[in-house]
Length: 113
Length: 116
Image 1 (tube, one colour):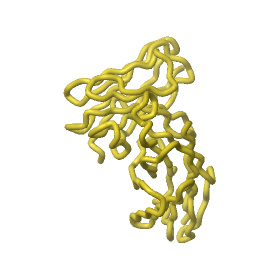
Image 2 (cartoon, one colour):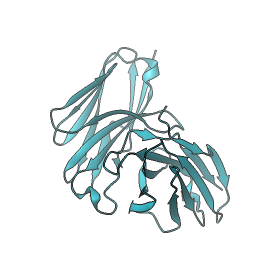
Image 3 (cartoon, rainbow over the protein chains, first blue to last red):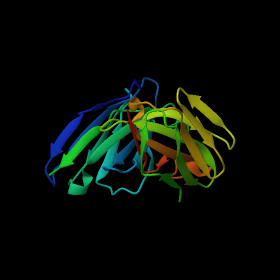
Image 4 (cartoon, each protein chain N blue to C red):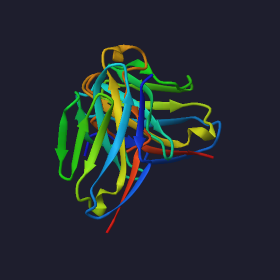
């Protein structure tokens, strides 16, 4: 049990729609990172938020956006969904941007049809 | 650019048959190398962090070691419940504060199946 919870666990959306995925971090963890994991691949870094501001982004287009709230919750928003967006989306929380890696949520499985 | 390569892609062992998984990495200054276990459809479960060459860590039947270019995850006398995908990831030091370098870079994993 990592103390990081994600919702929903599964989601099916239609191409072109928008989706919001949610993550609740451990209390006191002011850093949250989001990853996309395609089937059979390792997770890929989408972006990180630290103290409610974006603190780094991987190679993902602007239609992937996020928010972090003072209550240690965060959101990943994806606009104009494409079939290739089908993946397991993971969030990970940590005390600081340097101390990362130990606390992943169980993920949200997104299927785009 | 940080790179992580894991081998083999898949490994099938008999219960009790010890083996090792390999993680080769390229990173401009290593802050930490991470090992995870991942069950199908679940998030990665943290196993170990290694910080410097020569470091070793153990947990039950698992032992992780680190050199300057690779890490090994040794599995001693595995049981069927050890069946999972094992992921390796690196975090860069120093330059990590630049945009896009604060994250973990993962390999594609080794799918381990242990048969009774």
